[in-house]
Image (tube, rainbow, N blue to C red):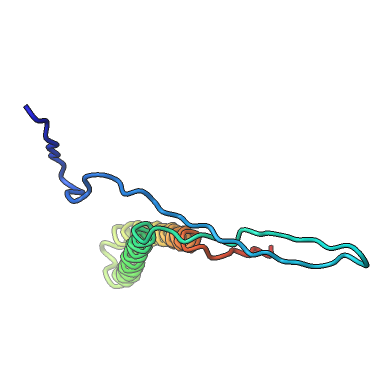
Length: 144
């Protein structure tokens, strides 16, 4: 009886097997002289051409983190607006002032938490962008 592959996964239906990554390195050779009668040759590996699927995966990850960053920004704005609303209600409704003050503090804490999440997603997006550039073979020059 022939064995057949049966995959019963919820996600990644079209990924039956991993495709091999084809990377082609290329280099530059420089020639020069150090003085009279001294010549040298230097070969430096400049980069490589990566598999297009890998680059597409990095782009998808970058978009995913950008989307989550924008959702976090909206959450921070909404929580901040609710905190301001509760501050106004505390002044207006003196009978339930304590309750509105507590809700204002909770909303302010939620806004700070959402801001932290936005910061986190921003850095995840930057890391995905750097990985994509690395896969494309771009050089990184960190001066500091």
